[in-house]
Image (cartoon, rainbow, N blue to C red):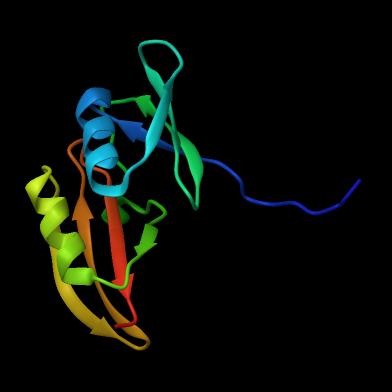
Length: 117
């Protein structure tokens, strides 16, 4: 048995489970497993976690952890996010190592996307 301790699950608040599921399914291809009316688990190539029903949102302005996606096609993904109900809250900016932007999904949670391209 290994002594490794790994982060292997993330849970986020969600104001509208239906809208959030549709957004992540359309934009990122995530799949979901419903566990009752107020919790849904998400599945992705890089992370597994859940959304729980809440009036709160995960925002860096209130000290929340920021989950960051990587893509080689930053502008293309930004367009897809906007077309599916996401809101860009920090437009594309450069930083050492690449470029990124921040967005909120339909339930108001903040995420970022970066690219080294």
